[in-house]
Every structure is written in structure tokens, then in C-alpha cells.
Amino acid sequence: MLSRTKVENILSLGLNGMNICLYLLVIASTIVKCLNANFSQIVMGIYGIIIAALLVVNEFHQSNISIDYFPFICLYRGRGMVLIFFGCLVLDVAVVNIIAGTLNLAFGFLYIIMSYIPSYPPLRPIGINWQNWKDFSAEGLDLMGPKHMEIESNVAMRLKSPPPFSQHIYPYETDIGDIRTSHLHKEHRATVHPAGHSK
Image (cartoon, rainbow, N blue to C red):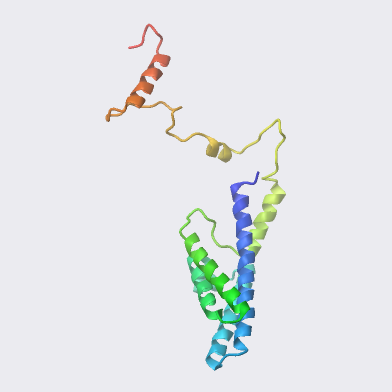
């Protein structure tokens, strides 16, 4: 069974591949759109092609320039706004433009929704995610153990342990007249104290 960390790493690699495909679609659809466009649209298309090409390079290796001057690219919300911009830029009557624009708009809104999920891993370039994948595979962190013996880490054991306030832990009486809690408290005292010494 895959660990949560490795599953998150697989999802991150999938997002890297999806981002590269979206940027390449932007470049192809922008070229198609510029074939029958006026001068202003061609200039906008050139800007779009340059930005998409730089984002493809940034997806493989994140430079300090993008981190210092364009930090929004490292956030899900910022990446979503960039994809929405690309979607609006490439939309046209051609089939490739409709497909590229729709996909960029859809994933742009998806990234914005994902920005509100705090447990999701941060955006990282494909080089770091691939190195993490190789490290996990080399260490054998997700290898299945023998059927007769189950080996788990302390973290996994704590995750599978019951919550702090469960019926297995000593239940305290409350001041709100909780009949069930009081009954459990009496049963616990009867088992702790001997029969002749129970109060």
C-alpha cells in the first residue's frame, strides 16, 4: 500500500506533466490564432508564446528569478490565474483553440480551488518531484511486508490509533447531566476498586 507522501509525490508529478501539456497547447494554439490575426493580436500572441515557453522551462527547473520576481507562479492561486489568462488569450473559432482554451480555463479554476486545500503539497518543479520519487523507491519505504509480519512506523501507528477522547479512555463526569458519561464513570470505578472497597 502506498504511503500518503508517495501518493502526493505521484500527484505532483502528474500536475507537472499536465502543466507542460497545457503550456505546449497554448504555444500551438497561439501560433494557429496568429495565422489569421491583425498586428495587435500577433503581438499579444508573441507575448503569450514567450511566457508559455518560459513556464515550460520553469516547470523543469525553477530559477531564483521566478521565485524573487514572480512568486505568484509558485502558488496554486497564482498558477490558476495564469492558466485562466492563457485560456482567454487562445480562445478562438478553431478546434485547437477551443480545446486549449477550455482546458486552460478548467485547470485554472481547479488550481484556484486547490489553493484552499491546506494539506495539499506545494508546487515544485519536476526535477525535485522526480528526485523525491527516486529517493522513495530507493529506500523501499512502500514495499509490502510479509503476510505473517506487519512492520509499521511510529507515525503510521499513531495515525491508526484511536482519537484522544474515545470510549476506551477514562470518561469524566460532566456538569451537564450526561447520563451515558456518568454511567461509564461508575463502571470504571467498579472495575478499579475491589468489590468490598467501592464507594
